[in-house]
Length: 136
View 1 (cartoon, rainbow, N blue to C red):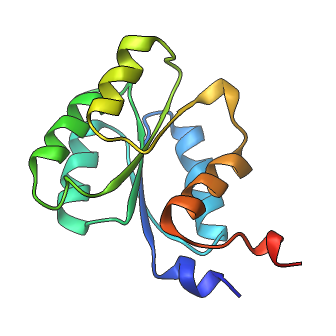
View 2: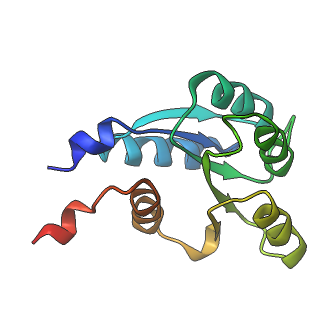
């Protein structure tokens, strides 16, 4: 089963909405991932640089340090230049999307447009983990 593969992967979720953070942490834990959580960009940046997760799910609107600032600072680090980042946000305006793309985010998901299963699928795709439901 692919959960062994997922168990080798660590995801950092930087999200300031407690309920959404908990839902994401619970879902990815159930999927077999090691999950780290952060409630603002400053905490997210510190955890990312200390723990080196395989992928970061990053909200843009957060207190203390916003997600775009966190992403820019992350990209200044040698390890941080390469880490995969998927933006999760309520924002969908073109300038913000363009800034996220400039910082080499892998994907940009507007919160109102996605389902939890879609986020898991994107993470699995980016990390090269097959979706167990497609094995039948």
